[in-house]
Length: 468
Image 1 (tube, rainbow, N blue to C red):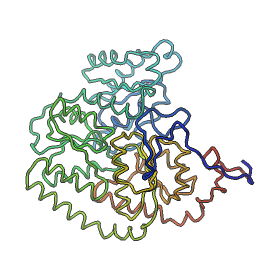
Image 2 (cartoon, one colour):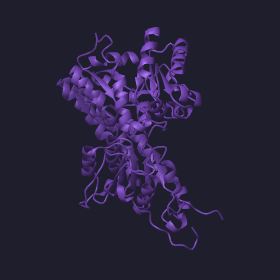
Image 3 (cartoon, rainbow, N blue to C red):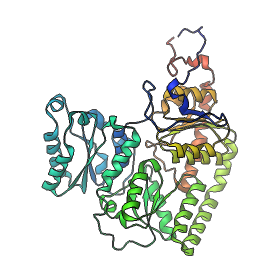
Image 4 (cartoon, one colour):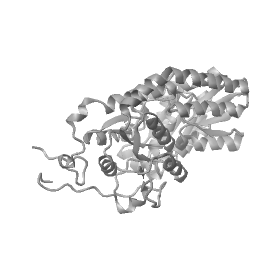
């Protein structure tokens, strides 16, 4: 593009038009479908989804059956803290090459599992199938049964070839794999006031904070699934009285299996922001119907909010009127972010997810302000278009959205799996406010005139500027 040529506005692909909706437009909204060919979607594959869910089980062996490139996407670059075993920090792969693609990789998988189990002595092993394995037809289940019999260690196949579906498909495959361990442990000694905390991945230690809240009000946390997870906790999680599901996309299927087979009710909650965290504590207390639990929950909420509110008010004064865009994996995360940003005096003008369904988007539409653009399964060009059109001050997303924000000269906050600070709970809200304020109010942005489309030269690529 030459310097004197006019800038062309990026257009949404025709096949994706119904997946982009503006509140108040009255147009129809479509979601929860396969990605449009050619859109270069931000959405991840089924294999990615399965690893996101299972990798925080820290004392299990996780091995990728496929080319070495697939194993590069390992949990160590996504976070998840462990209070004990660090086995999940290792990323193992059978490293299938041309020979195995032609003649099959079953022998290599068996040998790899036997060697790794002998050396690390894990509590269990998860074997992830990739696209190549789905194509060549290796019988992963047969190999897992064979190795389990030899070693007396549960080897569990995860049916997750990337082409099988979306990230949500991988979530379901992971839930089904994890469920094979459920019901095999002793449930004696579990309190009648007990919960499983599901969909919390302990990126910055959030699972420990949330567990402490519930223990303070008298509720036992049987298992965190899967952040700081343990195989033995998963085996006995069917003894809990209630499932609290935070990341609904990743864990709803497992919670439903527990409800159908073991009669454990599920409640959807969030621990992001004062309002959601307080409600999550009240939800559990109300379920058990013990007035003492509710009194303790109310006392905890009152003390924690009193501790952090003055500082939040100071940040709100500085951030009032700023505009934010967010694009995240799950819808519940989007709900919480909209409410938390509103508590800081900011307005969400763009909201999108990778895995939301019709019910999720209906709720997102209800809580967003008129004029907010809502997108399903977006791509870099669309996100850049709306960030510029809405004159956004802050973009919240994950590792794939960070380059978009920085190329456009927009402040960015990581709310995915690469961050190092806890954002959940009452203390987490203060961390979030602090990060947002430092990002949005940084003087660096005056050197990046993000609203000058001519300087950015956006045509068909993001910030495709010419060299001088």
